[in-house]
Amino acid sequence: MPQLGETVAEGKIVKWFKSAGDAVKPGDNLFEIETDKTSMEVPATSAGTLSEIRFGVGEVAKVGAVVAVISGAGTSPSASPAAAPAKALPPRAAAAPVAAMQAAPTPRTTPLDPFREVRTPERNFGPAKLPGGAFTTPLARRLASERGIDLSRVTGSGPHGRIVASDVERAAPAAPALATGASAAQVKALYTDTPYEEVPLDSMRRTIAKRLIEAKQTIPHFYLTADMDAGRLIAMREEANAAAPKDKDDQPAFKLSLNDFIIKAWAAALQRVPAANAVWAEDRILRFQHSDIGVAVAIEGGLITPVIRNAEAKSLTAISAEMRDLAERARVRKLKPNEYQGGASAISNLGMYGVREFFAIINPPHATILAVGATRRAPIETEDGAVKFISQMTVTLSCDHRVVDGALGGELLAAFKSFVEKPVTALV
Image (cartoon, rainbow, N blue to C red; front, side):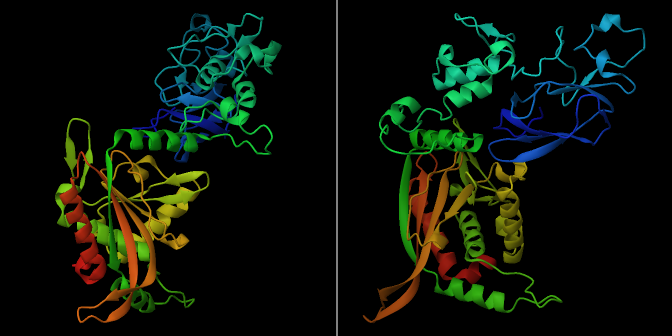
């Protein structure tokens, strides 16, 4: 299992492109993996025969685990360590097996068990026998422990009645209610007379729940809210889109969104207030030279925050094209880890849903996140005492008080307001 990013420790096998016994060559896609953020295809790095598949579809493997074994070219599957000890091979009859994505496979002395599940070095590799006589796999025991499930009450569907992971998941598909501390059984007991549908948590939703709890419990949030006149920004957007050149099909070369301007203005604000262009790193603060802006994108089952790198140096059309590409690939979970990890700050825009204002939760290790509401017609008093209507936008800045103090957060929000109300200054 390849390294999938600094914060990713495991991946789920969702598809095998090859079967045991198939010939493979470098570059051939072997399997597809899914994490809480993305999915990706993993190619073979060696030529030979796929002699053994150790993790089936739906199983989860830790980073660095041997998921398959490729024997040297010309070697039959039966010559792999899963079938016979190495000393039984005649000299130079076959090359040493090469584990996919790892230098050497874990030795095996028993035939391949198609129901074998995730193996972790800190746990017993063999099936464990329950007092009642049933056997369980390592993954089933781990899931049961995490979910508080009594395995003696679970019926096994594996060979000879062995309890496998899917049996545990069917017994209690929902994880404990992380936000309340109550178990799934305790929560369900409150609704015995109420019809409902149980929706199992996938890896993305589990990660979101874990990170949000971590953020609210460990980050000392405070919030700053400001109203601003977005009239000039809206006018500039309309003028730019109207002036966009047309292609041969009479379609505009670009179409800028309000969010593109907001990204540019936020990047400029972080450059103007560099002390706030920073993240928390436990025993230190990291301050950045460039404005790398994460932008929250809603996808099926959750959200992800792809990052626009060096946003302060990019044109509006470049930001627009990059954001559109990242959002499209995010929705089909095709982003690479380096496209959604890191960043100095983030933007969450719910204005398109008519939300006037909200308070966003900081995405660690970021120290700030900007929550953007919808623009609306609002009356204000002019200097001469008259009343006029403007296109007002309300934004709320969430700050990590360990990095950004109140005055610094106010300075950052004021800088952003100036760029929104005089958008041309963000472009120079």
